[in-house]
Image 1: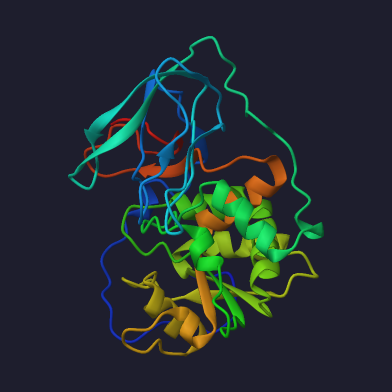
Image 2 (image 1 turned 180 degrees about the vertical axis):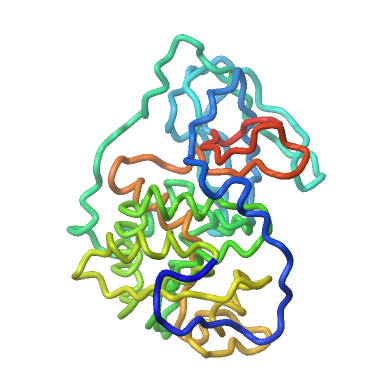
Length: 315
């Protein structure tokens, strides 16, 4: 696919070029998956300490309600992804292969599944520490796959400085088009999320890096970009693993993260575009992390799709 822009395409050294298979789902709009009859919400679905349950079997809970608090600094809050009744809190299989405690909620089939506390949050009048605390209680973790608690990444240690915020929209993995569709459909949420994070970090500039096989997404972001937002769109070569944090930083900023160091050590913070969009939705609607976009694709799939799926949905 030819890019719709004239900037020099950036990349990192080495890498591989597998066929991306994104043509299967890249033109399919995000659709909401029907709410399942039951959700299983592990208290350990993030890096760090498990969450501490605040509910008990028999409790009625509402979609977006806090049901578990962070169990430490490196931990995350957990919210009900459906309105229903807590059936049990017991050990359950986990994608990691471990058995972990989970809150099991039976969905109320008669509920309209509206958000528990829908409201905008006046982020522009708040201090950075207040914003970080809200993100902590919102259950935000890296939605690019690592599930690292976002508030930890945004809690900059004394003596450290962030100059650049980088939005990772590379989505270099074959088949996946969730981030592609988020950029096309949720761009307003992305820009709001960027504003909030830049205020927290005191960053002077944001970069959004994505591969040229998502050229129409970059063009959509370019057209919708608020003129007062100091943000630059960076076209990247389609190559794996372009979305790895160190490779992305090298490609976008031409700066190398030293071995054993973090992006913060070269004044950079990186977040996935899905995480940034979710932060935007949180401050616009009050919606914590209760759902995410998932691509279902591959040669064995009868109906490929990009689905908005409640957290805790079982396969």
